[in-house]
Length: 179
Image (cartoon, rainbow, N blue to C red; front, side):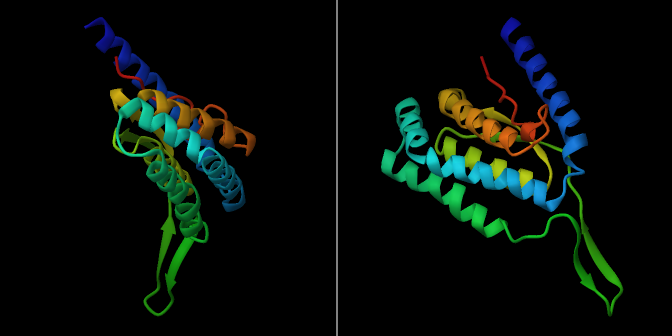
């Protein structure tokens, strides 16, 4: 029971810190968000192999080669696919119908990360959450906590270098650890 209470308190603390970060991050410009995403993408690409190795060693799932490809896909291809998307302000307008769509962040996202593709899923979820000016708190599968937490650490450092709100770093500050 003691470990459960610690875990609940940690999750609550992380969500509160993420919300504080969100209150700053939701006002970022497209350029500020792009700087953060670009840095995260670069770090994901640079560490694709080492993170894949960690994931395979820790979970026993897959091969380093395939996990590396998945990490590269998320860090590079997903990033390149979402990069041109407009996610701030008016994103679509139909002048004939006098209708327009405005992009607005949701807030704090709780992301459960599986043991099957732990590092690539973390990179993917960080990129898509941040693109919309949301923050994210990761909850790693217990059998993949080490590689997920290492991925989060690298992404946090990248986001910090790019100017993300320190308390937020996409709510990436730390991930929840289950006992």
